[in-house]
Length: 117
Image (cartoon, rainbow, N blue to C red; front, side, top):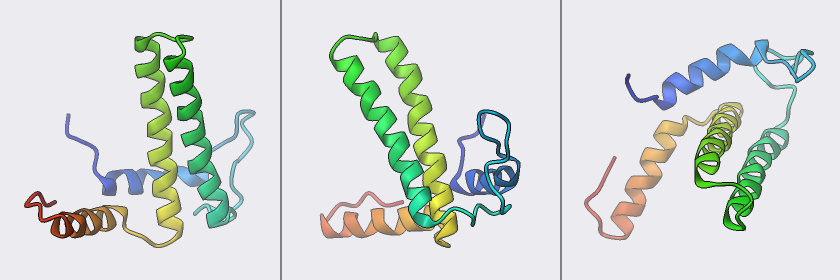
């Protein structure tokens, strides 16, 4: 199986947005491109998922859940973060793959590191 690319995620997100439903199977968006949510609302979705990851991490560190459960649930929460982050970038007309590559390479240049994307 090949690794997922930013482009594959973006295409799937765009295709799924008009089909997405809330828990009770009601349509989540009135606009097929998710434009019925403002960038601030998409940011809130990203931060909400990061909060869910942080809460999970807290439970793991205090011993409420074991490592196996943490690993499984952490992967889910971070996948949600990535998915919402891509939709936020889409709504802002940002190609996340290009943005990450550009920023990574600029930081490498700044710290005099030869690792580039």
